[in-house]
Image (cartoon, rainbow, N blue to C red; front, side, top):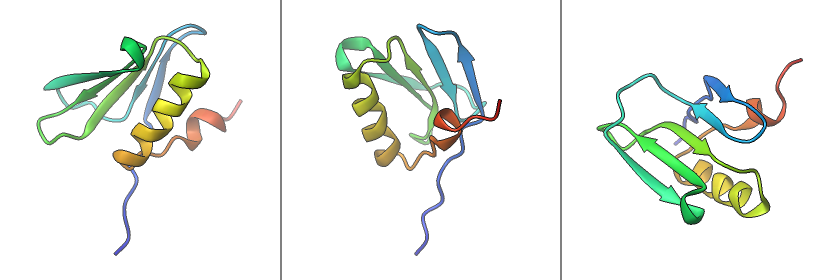
Length: 83
């Protein structure tokens, strides 16, 4: 069975805080990680709508990587964006 990864649609924000948008569906609930530095917005189906990163430290990147694995998210556009 092949797992389909959810694509990153848009990156909003600046150098300090960013929002990684995966969907335009309404947010049903949010989960916080890394002392509130990483926040995940979920829809009614428990799929990721977006991820808010309030800082880019090693802990936050590790948490982001774990979230991507848990929710089958593709982050390659974030790290290999076209200029």
